[in-house]
Image (cartoon, rainbow, N blue to C red; front, side):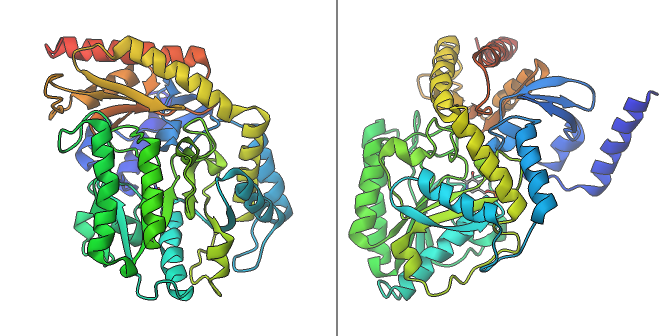
Amino acid sequence: MTAATSNADELTRLAFEHCLFPVIDQETVRREGPRIYVKGEGIELTDLAGNTMLDMMGSHTRANSLGYGNREIAQAVFDQMSAVHYVGTTSHFAEPTIRLAASLAELTPGSLKRVAFTSGGSESVETALKLAKQYQRESGNKPRAYKTISRWNAYHGSSMGALSVTDWLAVREIFEPRVPGHSFIPNPTRYRNPFGMEEEAYFELCATYLEREIELQGPDTVAAFIGEPVMQANGVQVPSRHYWQRVREICDKHGVLLIADEVITGFGRTGTWFACEHFGLEPDILTMAKALSGGYAPIGAVITTDAIADAIPMLRHVHTFAGHASAAAAANAAIAIKRRDGLVDAARDNGAYFGAELAAALENHPIVGQVRGLGLWHCVDFTADRASKAKFEDDTVSVIVESMRAHGVLACRIGTALEMSPPLITTRSQLDTAVEVCARAVHEVARERGLA
Ligand SMILES: Cc1ncc(COP(=O)(O)O)c(C=O)c1O
């Protein structure tokens, strides 16, 4: 046995003995083994067995927007840790945290200006929901408002408040009862929707349903509506501009705060700094995390307007590591690199190229229902029957993803679809490779299963 094999065996054994594996069933992990990586460079990731793969998922979570081994960010974190790594919360700040807040005010849409920091996406959503409730009470606008509304298939995180507004990944039911006062409404989806409606008409229904739900709950009791500008469920769901404009109007009419959850979409993923920009949407509160630091440090944030911030004498919400100086240094460096290297525009242009190539390679394949995406975030939505748009009820989509992995490209299954969301530094030749491998995997699996 070589040293490398014995190290691999030991790490696998230790992982099984001591690690819990979230949102993957334990049997699958037993069968496939934990995925253990030893090295990353650019968008390439090397596992323990020495296999090097193109990481088209941004470290599985889509957080990694700048690839691996970025020495500039590492240096910024090192310098900050050596100077003063962390100074606490409340009114205790180090320079990078304040500078980061100012940058976020510049980059986010509309009149968002005041930032509360967190350590990640769920904390950001938790903060946003509580900020909205506290604002409605303390501003005197709606002293009775404690209710919130989100959408079917929404994913907003795993802490109790965020979980309560979540309907994806089957993570909610086992922890019920939820935080009281929450309801779900239909979400705009492309390709197939629960009522088999034409897309624009369905989007209209989704917006109208929000108004109906606010009226049903009683407008005085509804504090906020939360939605992902582009939803991840079943693959990159891009609604129309009209949908978000109507949601904005309805929220304004009823004094409901609009929270845009940009935890996935923020910082260039969709080819703009924030996905709200595609829809001319100006939310009251915006949440972010993931690519804020390119995945180099756990950090998230919530940004709101002066009017909301000024109506609250004391924000009654805090996290120990909120605004951590070294994490803020990583975020500042990540933002500076994206600005200097024009990576958000690159995501837009290379993303359009990627989407067109993926569609050209796959959209006519018998098991492909739709190829869609925005910026550097694309998916292939599969169907077992193009006429009825039936979903695959078996493991076909997962097997295609596994086949891509075997051919050296990491993608992810997301419900009925296969998703790719590579770092913004991904080159066109790497995108070509991903398209080629994806097409090969689809063809091979379809042929083996007698589907094409
Ligand atoms: C839209 C959205 N909001 C919130 C979260 C939760 O973020 P975290 O996992 O960092 O807590 C996620 C995570 O995927 C997300 O996609």
